[in-house]
Every structure is written in structure tokens, then in C-alpha cells.
Image 1: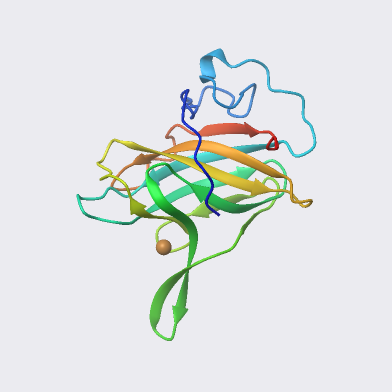
Image 2: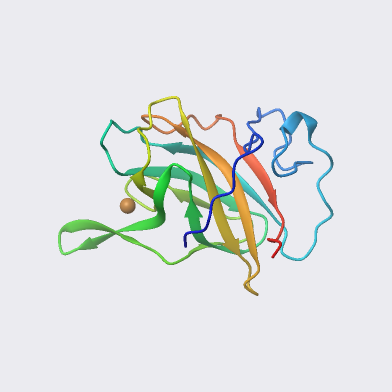
Length: 185
Ligand SMILES: [Cu+2]
């Protein structure tokens, strides 16, 4: 689940206003305003909406925190891993009652059914960031890579950025739409 993060050379997230068609003509890694037409769809390509992404702030010395977002994939995919250059470990966790104690544990994969929004939120599914490399103050952001697999096991990577915030951003907050082609190997 961990792979070598690539350096972030360009703004990775398309922060868009609601006025902009969210899944139109975006290309990974380019500013939204200068985005060329989307590449022709090919096997393994998927559009992923990342909405209302946020991460709870941390204080110096704090090792872990939670991240939340709404994910909508244009095609059915499984979210198989996540990583961030700011965290040694990134996992998808679920909350489960064990007796009368709520516990969280890592899930090996998270299904993203085509067109259906899957919400990671406090008290439920969440992104767990651990082994943090630096404090995350309110207003900063956390680069994030999500690795998706299609039914044949072909991987795509979604690069986004989650805002560090004490609470969930408003529904009208900027969203990012990412066209994630299959990984080149
Ligand atoms: Cu957790």
C-alpha cells in the first residue's frame, strides 16, 4: 500500500468554483484554467470527483489525524491504497462497534460504485494519516494520492489535496475533478 511518492511539480488539485463544469476538460496536474481537453477515454481511465476534502489539524508532536472527503468515480473502481508525502502511513479506516466500544480498523479496499458518492466522514469511513512528518495547521493542505483499481486490476492514481480545517468545508466548497489514466508501467 505504500509506494514512493513522486515530487509534486505542478499544482495538483483543481480548485474550481461551482460555476465551472466540474468534470469537463480537466487534465491531471495542470491548472484548471489552462486545462486542455480531456484525453480520449481509454481502458482504465476514470474521472473522480473529490468534494469537501478536509483533514483535522494537528498540534506539534501529534502523530496521526483523520481525513474526510466525498468520492465519486465515473466508473466502478476499488480504492486500494492512499499515500501522502506528509505522512509515513495512510490507510482507509472504518469504524466498527466491538461490544460497546467503537473501534477503527484498516480496510483493504473501498468500493467506489460507478456514479455513486462514497463519503468518508467523522465517525465513519475515514482516511487515517499516521507517522506525520510535520504539524498540520489550519489553512494548510495535505497532498494526497489515491490508488484505484478497476475490475481487471489496472491501477489509476488520483492526485488531490485536502484542506486542513477544524470542520468540514461547506457543501459549496471547491471540489476537484481528476481524470486518472491508468498507470504507466
Ligand atoms: Cu482511523
